[in-house]
Length: 131
Image (cartoon, rainbow, N blue to C red):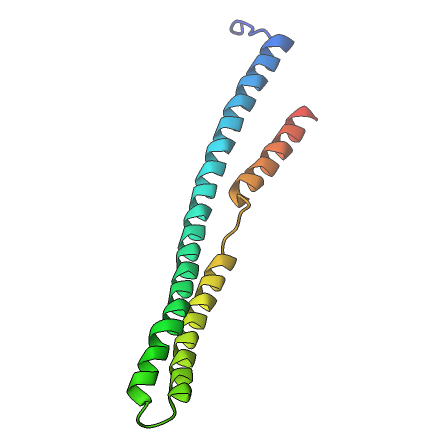
C-alpha cells in the first residue's frame, strides 16, 4: 500500500505562493539596484573631484604662474612673453587633469546592469513556469 495521498494545492494557494515569491523577488531586485547605484555614485564623485581639481589648476595657472613668469623672466625676455610661457605650462597641467577626469567619467554606468539582467532572467523564469 502506498503512503497518504497529498492533495494538489488549490488555485488560491498557488496564487498566494506566487504573490509571496514575487514580493521577495521584488525586494531583492530593489536591494541589488541600490547597491549598483551606490557604486556608480562613488565613481561619479571621484570624477567630479577630478573636474574640480582641473578647474582649480586652471585658475591657479591664470593668476600665480603668470606673475611668476613676469617676475622671474623679466630680465631675460619681455615680461609679456614670459607670462605667456608659464601660463601655457599650467594650462597643460589643467588639460591633463581634465582628460583623466573625462576618462573616469566615461566609465560611469547609470544603468544597474546586474539588476536588468536578473529582471530578464526572472521574466523568463515566469514565462517558463506559466507555459
